[in-house]
Length: 407
Image (cartoon, rainbow, N blue to C red):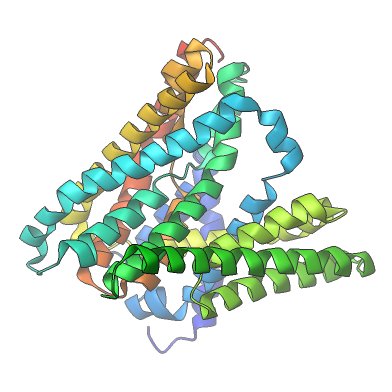
């Protein structure tokens, strides 16, 4: 199988991901779930249609491309006009529940990770592996996938304060997750690299990483503001936009900063400062389905049943930590912003789904930790927690909407 040209596998990814999405829709599940399941079936540890070097090396460019587009579209959702309309409830609740999910997951993993040695037999230092890994997983657990939640809201035709706040929170969550991941990734690099760890060094690297990422995205966005007035054809818009997204990502990776944060900044600048930005996002959205299909199917192919015992326990720990953080954080934010009683009691249950950005970020973590047995466990644990969350989401969201009287 290893002598087959990679284009064959790219073709299979496109065709089979489409089939998986259709099957998922038939069972009224999000398409992402179908992509992931197909990927798991094709993985080296199950049917073996995709070999290990293909999944982890030869097709990694698909991951970079998909994550760049995801980050750009997330930045495009941060319209200043829309943010002003969201109100104080959402602007308090979103950072509160995201930070609490981050801290709760990181904390519970710090307590759990020392037991990993009993399963792997590997000696691992707390500061150069356990702490950075807990930090990175905690950061990606702050994200909330909107697809499943939106599908259930539409199914039950829900309306009311809880529904409105849910929609606002899930729209902003992924942006915060990318920011947290950029910060956590920079800190992890310092601890793993055995560099001299002091507050000055840490602060400098954090500021450098964030500043360079924001500068690359912002400068490219401002350049597009002037360039776009000379472009009218849709195909030309797609060429310029895809080129800009990939250029920003490539420069960020080369400079060892965050390509996700840079492309989120690009999307933010375009949506707020570029005329006719709707046309630019429309052309990018036209290519997102095949790319996302390949990306999530490839992500599912990382699933390794040989580490399922350890990864399964870790997936449960991640799920518990994230859910506790979302529940506590949403109540805290609701209390501070004086949100309605129904929001305070039931919002946390509607923030269970975790898919798109979380899956992408855990694959991006490979660049931080490098190949290792614990990295394999981490990737599979996060994928496992995503599957657990996707299975539980319909019941929890339906429960919250019904108890709030909005279904």
